[in-house]
Image (cartoon, rainbow, N blue to C red; front, side, top):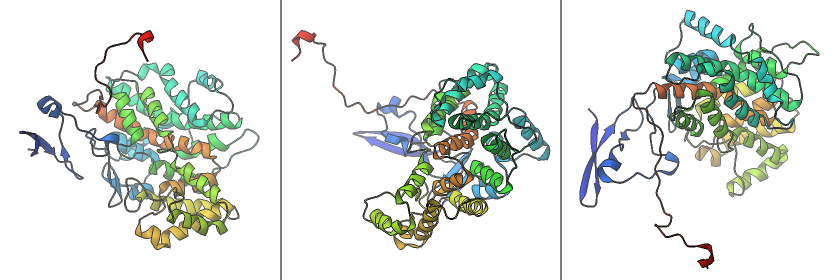
Length: 427
């Protein structure tokens, strides 16, 4: 039985339930507060409000913990694959060998997109941002796959989830190819998920493309590290859109649009822009002093949620250094700045005391640049990886018997009722 708390307003008291999860802070249940006491709670940004019950992802920012279905992100990144993590997020458990073979085959054999869909890309300007293309293209999927948009049918929800996970790399690669004026590359069924994406992004008809195991592993790990991150802005957007009964393709497009915001998905791009601004290693001390004097912001360091070290950054650091050793131009001034800045931040008492450690965005930006992706593609890759998290959260929402359409309240501070005045009488 849930514990209770008492809220006193004026001369009246109200009992509210206190709910307990598996772990994490207790939750004060205020669902009946408006009906009982005629008041709302006020929480801009929902920083102290649980908007749903979920079994998918757990974060303890103070302890630097990130769990997917109970499994630490470090273990998943080290031992698992992105498609296995996809299965885990969608279904709640890791697959056995037979289940994984079936799931991998399903995703692999749905990576192609409708032939008419390719013409959709030509409707965009040639200089369109890849995220603009992604937002429009994913939303348009419902016009091509309308046989799986009945959100009340569990089987159609499953088909849509598989289609989104399978087709997102193809759409992302096409957005990239279109932005650089190169022909589209058709997916292959004999390659892994990450390898297939890299081939679609970087191969050209004029020459054979050879996979690089280091880059393939790096891409797969980047996908794992960005697969889900609890009730962040874009995930909440997907859930809110889905609460109205909107089809899954529209909901994921809404999530992509939210992710495009620089305060959310653009953090690794901002970190790289900071490195560009610093320019050379000899300018780092001046920039560091500017950070200490609060003249500049240190992008890619610290995290709103993780008050200790970002557990994803530990894995991403190793991956970053492996990629740089494989293909990175160590004479590149930008990479020199990044490595020197990392060294300073990990040893300077100012940053250590404030726990301003490099986060996943710092390392992923450097890694993606070294792999050959322009900054305009960084958020696209984030969206590709996060699709499984979004669709898993969306699916969980529809399986929740307590689901209701989202309808946040407000604290109204505008004018009271007033009468309309004719224009000729207004001063």
